[in-house]
Length: 612
Image (cartoon, rainbow, N blue to C red; front, side):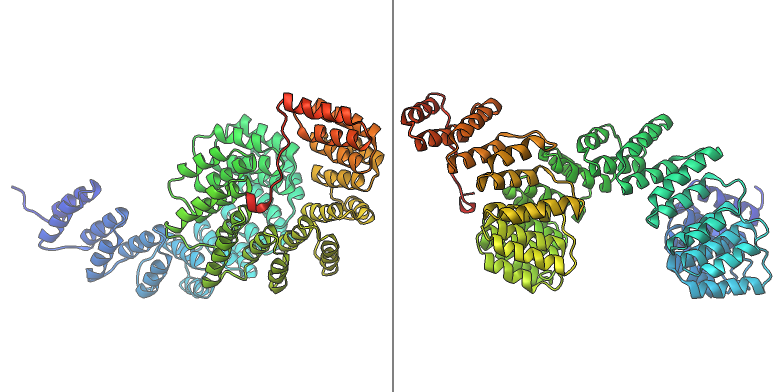
């Protein structure tokens, strides 16, 4: 039998390590009468590759004379497993001048400094490398540029880049991105222009940099230049350009990019699909977003959370619940999305049930969870439960959060406690647009028109810009209180001063206001001229005006119009019967009421918040 020697022992050891039989490798290693550096390095690198860094470090510490190979293995192992601090600490302990550390390890160490944002330490190591006369190759040079760039020392990054004989694409990309993140777009463009034939990564970095600096339109223009240049886009390019479309809300261009993504076969890429879903949802095409989602095979939690919100916005709460249940590791955002969505769709009891389940998960409740739950309490007029939740907010220090305070204003106003709502509003440290809108809507729905307009004046004076929701509240207040001149003034201001295109709810308020004050023909003009199809409720507003102002002729015409739109609408029959009675046509009034009985058309009984 041949004599065992270093070679045979090490060969057996290496064989077991390579086959991942670490138990046998340890037995061989322990049985070796003598071990050389190769023996130690085989075991250390084997455990590093297996991800068992604790065992690798144990052998490393037992090694009498640590060479460069062992140092390199451990440092690489730490860095590749996200243990940047340990990688840098080991490098400092080994005093790289005493170990034969190669440029790849130095690049790894600079990468670890980047992860830690340890600029000062990185500078010290960089200085030591220069003193030692280490030659900078593209890998080492780009790692130093990247470190300085991501740590915010852009001047040093630029200096190192200029010192490199042939800056590689990674170095240029790193510096472009660093400049863009610091708002220095012109400097980023200067670096980009250093390359006569920029690769797709350079184009992508500058396009993304434009978007970061709110220059989405310029990003789209740059993408056009890239295509004219002849550079073939990749998945990252398409995702980035779609992000620009998302930012600008330009659906047409987004749809063109969607077709482009289909052509390249990347619509199932998770990032591309997520941005496309977001574009369709934000641009008023939630059903298209849902259709796109149904074609995907892979998802992440972020996309699934978005789909919960999108499905709820479409009123598809069952689909939203199905998506929620499919998330294996639900985040707090997942819970908040389903609670908020159910509450906004008229399922407050279910929303509170989910909130109760959330409490059992161990998640730390945040302002969004509480505000959604308190809003749900407002919908069912459960003031007691709402106040209990607010008390909990006080216990965990969230009572001053705007979302929570706004929800409390909402529940007080829905329960008719306007003064309580105003007290919460006045105690807010800094009111945002949501809290202003909530208080305005509270005044409006409770018939406090003058107070609503006074509050609106205060809002304008402090510089808060009104939104479409703000004007819904203001016009509703004017409508409920018959403040015609004020309502007309703010309806026109919304269009011509604030450039907000009126939505159907704004027109509905104005139609009701015109009818309420007896300007019935003008109400009909607004209704027929608006860019929406009028529903029965809008015509009913005019019919109520006809009844209140005893316009029998117009009332009959309007009632006929309503019955054409909605033959079973009880409001038309009741109001028309009232008009006949007012004009002394008792027989015709009685005939209508008998017709309602025959056709089983029942007047919907009135309800209050307490009844719901």
